[in-house]
Image 1 (cartoon, rainbow, N blue to C red):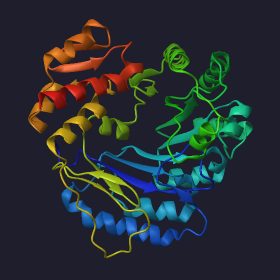
Image 2 (spheres, helix red, strand yellow):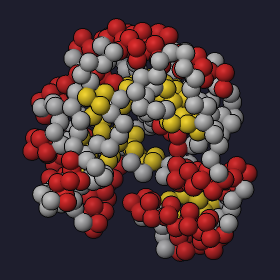
Image 3 (cartoon, one colour):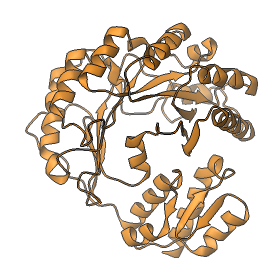
Length: 374
């Protein structure tokens, strides 16, 4: 692995409002000391850079809502972080439609951003209200048009499905409206009711009910079919792209490549296998950082299966064994192939068309086989 074959991920854990389904490390962006945040991130980069190469392959600003950063803060952050090693290396930023004004977009591009991930979620006004989105559908459409015309390397739209009360017809209309905007990349997220969120509590009270498993599968299949018709090809369970528009940064996660996680609550993965999770809150410059530790072999094997099997490149059994010492028994793989859920070519296992919607179950099956074989 090249010393420079890594990405930088900066976690910006602040939002205008917290979404009712969100369980991420995020907070309201009231009274954020943005200068202290950038000081902390740049100091952390200085402390971690010896473990990585001088220039990353990609940079990704995620959250939270990175588009809430004041323009001068974004400029300063990207000016002082190392630029990607390639002249047109991917620099992504997650943005909400209400933030992406013409002036904001110009500043983002001038600061070095060349790829945007837009939190559209839906073009249906009723479901947008259900999701507590801060933007209107008109704002979302205007933002997409503005971004599509901008000088960007690429851009993406997030779509949430399997909403309470959503029908197949609702979803069909929604995805067609999104496809008509001609996005080069789409990320799908089936709504989940995570513990300790307002949605989970509403479900416990009987106020919200998600679609059953059969309808969820029909919804996913409908989305896949419509996106493929629009030449958006699945390259990971939840991600679809036109040729040349795959997310390079996220692909590195699914290919088990290292990444330098910076900022409050960020996760990181060093080239030597150490992993760390930053504490919440802005770390004062000068304080030591958690260098992380290598997971136990079984945990490492489980992570490798979980991340790579969802990816179009599949799971490399030889890499699994050389990195962790674990081998999946062929007796555990054969039923997946027999039932049409997976394919095997040499040392690689791939999810089939039928297997992608059941990817979590396939991963559980293989990791259970690992545990029993160990």
